[in-house]
Image (cartoon, rainbow, N blue to C red; front, side, top):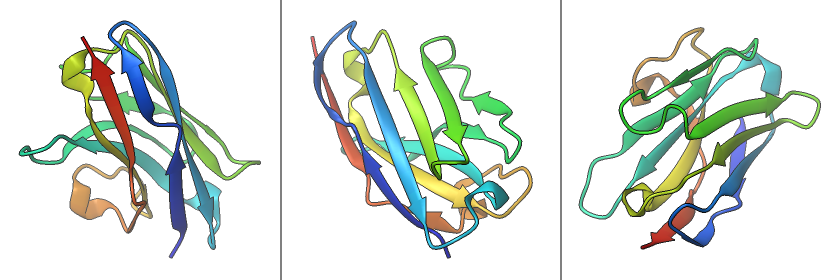
Length: 123
């Protein structure tokens, strides 16, 4: 299984931006669809975005579309999540995940998970 390490989280004011990175090792990165999820305290983990092996993105339309951008660099074995126009309700721990499924649809479709990176947005 591929190992994943997230970075790039931090404390930012509302309206600010962050770029999260997720570095993969131990597997053939281009073989995996990659996803980002987040979990706020007291809430369930929720899907944020995913990107297919070929680079096609899909977003959670209700909460992040138009503000977040997922991308991948297969040469660097890294997937990114650009967070713009951040809101206090975006505060959560963000996790990246790798899936050997062609089109993963739920969290259980993902085979490997990182430890997460904390994003805190102040008002």
